Length: 418
Length: 152
Ligand code: HEM
Image (cartoon, rainbow over all chains, first blue to last red; front, top):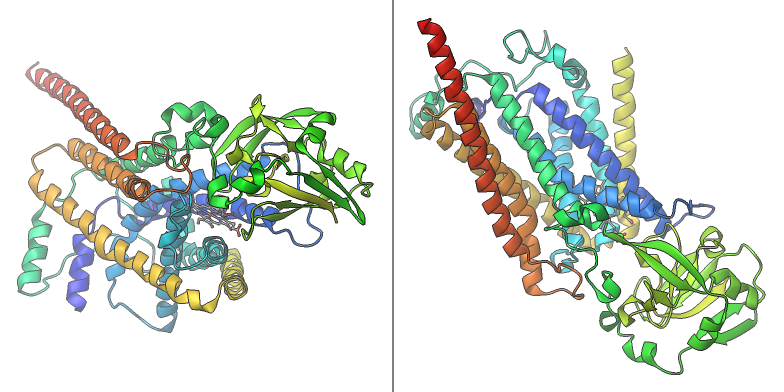
């Protein structure tokens, strides 16, 4: 077993598998992970704020950008993590597999890190096209919990590898004059730098390895390494370039793989949740529909005609989905704060919005005062010059700056000052 | 010394985050769902370490043997193209499948992903061939220059 693992490790040697490569890739991947974590945490708390939290309402595209970064950096993680795992693959076969308690913990922490990272990015990606049937767990809560495990095990991983990381951080310290990776000094053990091949006995496996090993060693380690990094760069450019158009309109022309396409949907705007899926068609189309506005014990009902008779405002605000796609749109309707004044609500209170939709976790949302009383926050009746489509929330929906789409409640039933 | 402090600091931070993760998990996700998460974790390791990585290893070994006469750069270009194709495939095939199963809204997965994937492969083959041809031209020119320099 021992010699088998050893032979494996030998066979896996190639110039692009070395500690310098692992460090260079680790930096990029670590950066992408931190970006995902920071933007993800923002997305979490804007949906579930802790008491006393306040959020920026400008720039209006703030959430569009943070969540666009989340998904884009997230997709870039795929080639990066594969490259990183490729660069350290021989370590999987290190001998002896466990050297002691500390080593066992170290390997366990790496197993946790790799598993949780692969898990996190894979479920994130699958969630962007809502293949929930693959998840034997609730996506949002699980993705949130595991994000701490990913970043926590990342911190531990950096702590463990810090001497190697600092040693190979700068390129000039990493290579010798011949372009070979310098080995680690003195006591630091490094299982990635080429080791001399010893006789591993006779048998099928050793013959296999001998066959592998007779393959010529790459003569030019520099070319091999450069090829490796170019490949990683092209792969990142491909996965990002061919999808990012769903969040960055000027790159829409290159969007051939993203799960959303700008301009595709009713009102030329993508829809996440349809009226049919939300089971609201009858209630929303009813001629008796009214928006109920409440503050304390004052309640007034407004039908669509009455809402249209109020002062109408026109705003440009993006619809920015938690799933990363976004699109700018032109909305028209009365201000939420004007409606609140009609029922005598106290300036600066939070506002609860309730949808006709029943049983969804987003059927009821709360708007913090900074959003509710913002001049740009409307009860939208029209989008891009046409009446709201039923799938975009007809007869009336919320639209506010710098908030995720799930909170821009559609098919409004009531709004209430809290 | 500074490195030591950083190491302990990061270790503590990491443990604190792991603890947070455990608490959040306990609060937000029902224990009956943990087994599903665990299956996914182990599945991710098996799929990567047990299937993807050995396959890549095999392909590189076979290519290294078969293409030992081919210039390193050409091998690198072809391997690079294969890697890019592989990663795109991993990301796009689930979309193709989910689109085939169906989505709740016509604007989720609205594109023809299978067709786009095919076009992508075609473009990649073309670009790879161009890159190899380009390299060959430069390579032979350099060889010629070298040999004429030798004769002179
Ligand atoms: C290491 C990488 C990642 C980390 C640390 C991370 C972290 C997070 C966090 C903390 C949230 C907030 C969850 C909540 O609202 O409770 C989130 C949301 C989300 N993430 Fe990630 N994420 C990562 C990678 C990805 C990737 C690769 C994708 C997709 C390509 C993705 C897609 C999503 C989506 C769609 C949401 C919104 C969930 C919702 O509000 O319904 N994530 N992420």
